[in-house]
Image (tube, rainbow, N blue to C red; front, side, top):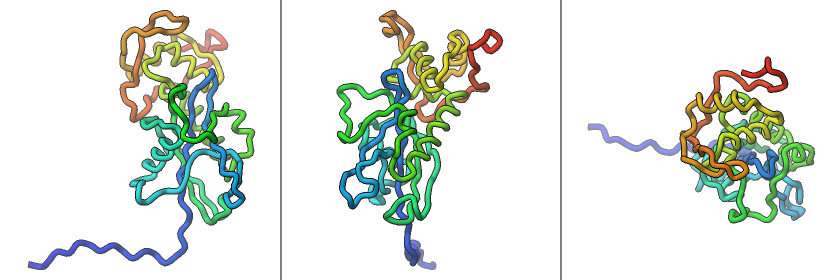
Length: 247
């Protein structure tokens, strides 16, 4: 019988390798505003873009990160303390000029997290939540302004036909709280009866019993049934500017 040998590891290719990073665009709704987490880069002159605001992220650690998603979750935990957010891959950016340290490719995710509470300490004093439109006007490090604009466009586009805003709320939440979160992200009001029907028909919510809603009144609380993926609606939301526009 021929002996079986385990395959040997192939020799590493003999060419210069690019820098590989993962960046995470972290959204929440705080103080009635859609906000993004930005971090202040070190002030040392040896670091690229010293002192400038940037998206949280960093280099892939081959000893810790089994995948790009693992790296994104690690960076998210280091920066915010959240361990189970909604996480979705946004895209990849790479060029010989985006990082002065060398040819660099970054793989970008966006995360949706509930608003931080007073008891949740940020991992770094240099981290701050900034309203997205204000953040888009800032001179961010690297190509992070372009990445942030793409993330905001993706989020607002998908909110039109998915349950993504539910991941921005602390559970349990009420339907009025969920509707207000949609309105904050989209920047426009929504019809109450049509919204309620859309949410309940999609069957992505699980009743969690009565909780204190707006103005302290009791209301049904809900939790997300499947935190791995967002529900997809058959139609986009419509404006409420006129009766003809309601569903």
